[in-house]
Length: 407
Length: 193
Figure 1 (tube, each protein chain N blue to C red):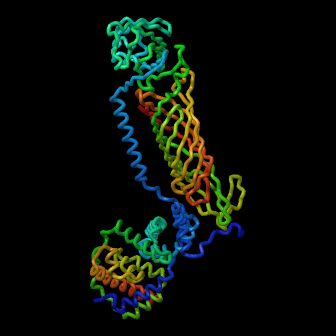
Figure 2: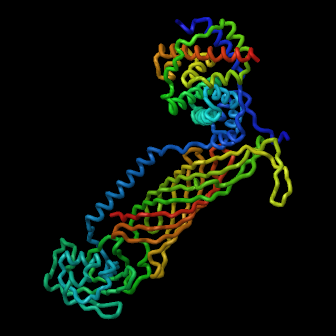
Figure 3: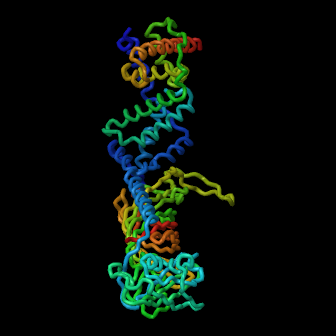
């Protein structure tokens, strides 16, 4: 039987459709509130594939650098002028040892070790080196055992005796300044030892200043946001009972990658955070509300709204690091910075001021890790998703920075 | 006060555009405009009011999350209706897919003439009719709603319920027989009063 063509079905269809044509039902007010609380809250966006890919590349790059840096010891001949002073920052356990001897040979290996701050080790370099109790010592090194090293090596050739001024500092991270004469010597990487032109041979306060070599910097920070909410004038609706933020959704992160030289760093970065707020759209209805004193007051009834604005900022940042001169604070630094960002979604531009500080932790001669609390304040206002609000956020975060010395 | 007069969306297109732009007021306006009708559909498809509210909530969220799928704003109402119906079908597929079994009513007979049924339907109020439909087994209820009230063809119903077209027809026949029987009982009861 073909039910679609059966007259009974047609009649039944017509009768039922007519009956239910205007059938409606009013949702329970509680259900209304529940649903209105949900709509308008955008779903959390899926992780950006490009971002994930960038993160993977950065991690792979870092891993590769770490692998390479751990596997090599870079030693380069450095041309230096007369009275060039070599500052050496040895490892702590080596520097704490009493220097009692120095093998007066001038072979390349020992010069490399000296340049790396290892030449003062008793085990490695036994010999006639004498060190006084004062912080400056004169070390006589006899080169007679291997006189006249080849010029090709770039090593000591002109004189058989060199004078070393040794300045040993105590914990933490002691430094040794060595003044060499004649000119040709070897120096290790600038992170570990670097040259100055000071001729007086005395301890130099600039020892703690950042090296002048270009370094790569990578930082990752977790951020928490505090915001000033600006409600734009809107003649079409009255909003009330703001609550900002309504949850812990106002957290985020930022990642930066760039270069640093002489304490100045230029980085490109991506930051992401959310602002969440709740408010009510006032209706024409009023309700009587009893306060804690028992007094009644008329209050406009409102439709509850919960909103979240997502910010994805891309930008460039310029920072100047300031190092402390005091030996006790030599690993600490502060910085000031400015940055310009553009919001990927709204294309809104904003300028930021940042201030922070941190402590450097040496991982290896070419790699420093620093932990740095910081604060960033937006000069401009950020647009929310529905353009009814503006935010002026203050970001407070803790960043982990890796500083990788270039060759 | 006119200064605080809520923004109005004069056309359906404006309303849809507002929702697409994530404007909260457009979403609230669309919800207020459609909620009663859509809840009515949910009540037809659901066994209980609580289930209807669950389906309604799920459907509304789907509507706002997927409004970008709507290609022509003029088709807003049928599109929303179809989202609600599909949500109801999914709801029952998820929860009680195994419920439908033969009810032994294939051969149920009803004795009234066609005109009598139409008269009963006409004289019975919507709430009572809804009660009769809600009392039907789940899959019968779905087919009665889809075919008799929402006007879907068996080919479409077969697709929606993942069955063959012939199964859809035979299920409908069984469902109609049961409905007629219930209407007959209802008519007799009504006449007794």
